Amino acid sequence: MDFGSFETLAIETSGGIATVTVNRPEALNALSGKVVEELARVCEELNRLGGTGTSAATTGIPGTADDGAWPVRGVILTGAGGKAFVAGADIRELTSMNADQAEFHARSMHAVTLALESVPVPVIACVDGFALGGGCELALAADFIYASERAQFGQPEVNLGLVPGFGGSVRLQQRIGLGMARELIYTGRRIDAHEAHRLGLVNRVLATREELLAAAAETIGEIATKSPTAVALSKRSINQATGRTTPEGLDIEARTFRAAFGTEDMKEGTTAFVEKRAAVFPGR
Image (cartoon, helix red, strand yellow):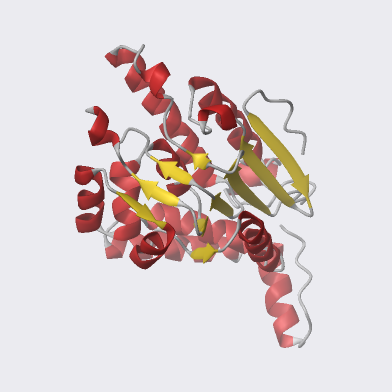
């Protein structure tokens, strides 16, 4: 995939993995308007994966693009410089905004996080250093969060007379429960990687940045051996069922299960199982 050029992001693709690095180390990778704009561009491109063809548009099944290609099988989201994943919003920019501009900035970041959630391949946030405020909220939009030993998480907006504006009041409670989300948001408290893991915010804790990125690549490699259409449909089903009642969620699951039966991957996977051989998924 050709992602183009960026001022605040570095994009690298290798072995079916796209690594998206927020690259403002001098500002601890703070989420300026430019970063948000460029993240939106990247997410737009990533959302074309496996679903750009006419058949995908008409059936709604990921992975039914005319060429059936999946050039990227997973995304790693991280930050440059070693001190921060993303330290938060760009406070210098915020101080110059009026209320209307602030709402526009928040809604722009909401669009980014929703687009990141809808990317049809797994997204792993690799947090090394600070993930505070907007940084924590960006990580929460990923499928998994892997953290290094020196990672720190928090929603410290109340310290500035602000509230979470990039999704923290919604997604944090989905990850760690309502009571703990309230406590972290009301106190503005920071937690380390191990506490974040205990609370269910983080999936894995690794010693170093190198181990962090290697573990994320290994997980994406494992997922890449599975049906890409099934993974994409599973992700969509989970996202759509979040926050719904049990009957509503089960209805979404049943309709997604039905959609899987329209894929070539399902035919190949079930046939391979019966024939006792490894499946070779076409990605359609």
